[in-house]
Amino acid sequence: MNKKMFWLFGLVLFCCLLPLFYAKAAQALSVHMKKSVLAENGSGVCCLDNYLEIGSFSKTGCSGDKKNLTTIKAKNKYECRKKTLQKKYRFADYYKTTDKFALVCVEPCSFNDQKFFDSSFVGDNIGLAKLKQATGNILPKQKMEIHPDKDGDCEYNEYFSGSSGYKDGHPFICMANYYWFKKLKGTQVERDYGYYEKVKSQTLTVHEPIHNIFHDYQKGQAPDYVIQESFCKAVSLTIAGQADNYFSDFFSGNYTLKNPPSKSVAAYNNFFVYSLASRFGFDENDMKIFFQKYVSDSYSTKRGNARVKAILDEILHQDTAASFVDLQISLK
Image (cartoon, rainbow, N blue to C red; front, side):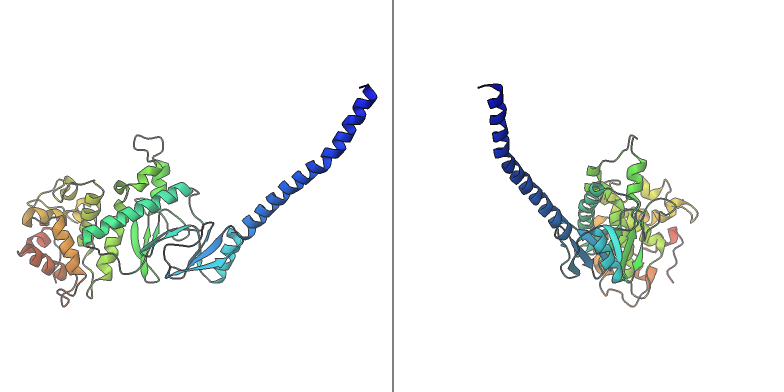
């Protein structure tokens, strides 16, 4: 084959293969464009929590609380946000829910970390399951709204810890978990994502809802904060493995029954359960019975601290006034 014939053969071959190349390229482009259109128009939905009045965008669908969730079409996060705000709902950058609680971070969220959020949701489920065990299946009356860190609804408190209250009638809990996740990086106590999936990380998830239980089931008046806080810490710290029992030094604060803490020291809010344990043998099983009776109509004619005492007297078969006297807690 001479040189002229070689080039002629090559030109013919090129002309024959060119249409095939274009056909393949066009097919690939068509598939890519089709996927792009699907991603734009059908890859996600807008989930509206009509109880908490929160909207969020999801690529996997809305689940976890069939009673309160509505699914509406949304091409993307921005359209979902627009539709959410039109309903005068809050928009959440992160949202996962069960019928008992939702973990949310409403805009503007202080973090951009899906793995942290997902791990927190796993851990919160474990923590609340442990709380139910400790109280005999008692949780706050209404669905809880839990914020793992600072966002459009929550600010850090002075201790960068947690707080509980109410929003539109439902329990509303703020934490600073991501703050500590960042703060402790590079230290000997650095926390990885797995930490947030374990019960040892669930101190606040257990602690804060107990305040809501005290308020939700009060008979006219909730007990003083010093009683609530001591019970909250006793339950949460034993669940998280930070205290073995109610005789722990954490609860005594190195004070004794003969020398109890005054209101001006931090140990004051921890000591009540220590006093009950030391004087009357109050333990974790008694704590469970206490909550069972607290949510019932037992001693419904009594209010606040006096009702707590009446329940404790019944459980422990003794007059528990001495523990109230230790901390100068009023029984009027």
